[in-house]
Structure formats: structure tokens, C-alpha cells
Image (cartoon, rainbow, N blue to C red):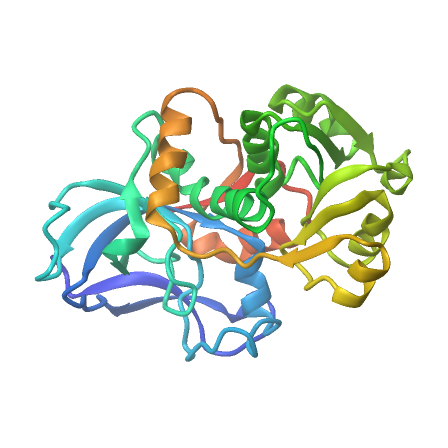
Length: 311
């Protein structure tokens, strides 16, 4: 195996011009880690938020940094403590965001963060799953404990997280409301959404008596979401930390969810895909050399489904 690899790195915070394709040393693995040959990597909003420096206070990175924390690939080396995995195993992961990521040919990752790739998905499809589906899972099931029969509003249903959230909420037996643009109405209905609000024509803020609001947009959308909840309902955001005083004023609960690696949840999620209960959707595919374009696509907020890098 070569001692070097191709990777996208950023040496400073800033625009997409900071993303440079470089030849760098292969990462070393610790005893609890595996080395994975990455086949495909997911591109997510957190990637460009980190690149822009928006999260540098929250996540202390050391530059230069390889971005991307969403991938599928094949194990090519094992740490000395690893007995559950073997060379050649196909895995997928949302890896530790504090470390170098997956815009690269190889990644060193703790074995506690990987799970077997869903057998029914190819490399690209599998790379599209971990971060968005874990985000939806942890928001709806850990932060909120969504129950069958409850009414949940999922903002931006055609985005990566929204697509996963609609499907998980329907699997749980909830009644799903979602916002989307005119062109995606039939798409989100096909995912299982019961009630679709076309945000170009209708105002979601007129909704009332919801049990849960899942905010994936923040800002004004979050601010207008409080009034849609019933007393005792819950607003969970993955963008902004909801204000406790405002929650108290509306007599509702509030939570912020920042997704964490979780191999056990990834195993459950793989089963949902392999039994046909969930589907993944790819918006576009780019090469590693075109990572800057991929991030621009993500920043446009126009992607339907996931943006993928072929490694």
C-alpha cells in the first residue's frame, strides 16, 4: 500500500477556494482504529459551515483540515485491538467531526464509529446515509421520543435530513407535515408525507396543535415555528439552539441536536434500508477534484437528496 494519498484540505477558513487537492501522508491508526479505503463520501452543510469558520468556536479543529464526515468504504488495515472486523469488510460511518474527514482516499476511524454497509446499497448510496439519517434519528427519537399518532412538522422535507426524517417518522407511525417547494410536492408525498405545505404559496405558521416541530433551517423559520405547537409540544433544531425563555413563553419544550457518531444506530438504519423500509436519494455526484463545486451545490440549498463525492 502506498504511504501517501490524495485528499482535499483547507489551510485557512474562507470560501471554496480554500479547498485544495493535495498529496498527503496516509493516516496512522491507533490500536482501537481501522483504516478505511473510502469509496464515496457525503457532502453536508456542516462541511461548508466549518470551512467558512462558522463553527470554529464550537469545534476546535487544527488546520490544515480534511473536511467531510460521511462515507462508505472498505477496511484495509486493523488496529491491534480490533477483533470484530476483518480486512475487506464494507463499512459506512459518520465519523468524529473533530478529526480529519472523508474528502480523501483513506480515513483512520475508531471502530466504535463504523457499521457494516447496508448490503442493498452501492457505495454512493451508502455514503448518502449516515450523517443525515443519524441526525434525523437522534433528533426525533433521542431528543424528542416521537410517538405513533403524534403530529410532526419536518421543515425542508426534500433535503437530505428531511428525506430521512419523513421516512423515520412514518416508520414510527406519526402523522407527518412537511414544507417544500412546488416542484418537490409529489416527491415528499411519495416519501410518506401526509400533509405538504408549499412554502412558495402557503404559510406553515398557520398550523396549530402540532406535537413536534423538527427545524432544519433555523432563523425566521424557527421563530415562526413556536406558535404551531400545542402546549407541552417540542421544537427540536439542528441549526440554532432554541431559546428556553421563548419555549417557556409558549409553554412548550425545546431541544438542540448535534449529531454524534453511533454505530448501534447505524446498524438499525442499515436494516431499515435492507428490508426496504427506507430509501436514499442522490442529488448529484462529483469527483474529489470538484469538491468545491459540490460544496457550492450544498450551499445553494437547492439539492434534492444527497451530494456525493466519488473517491
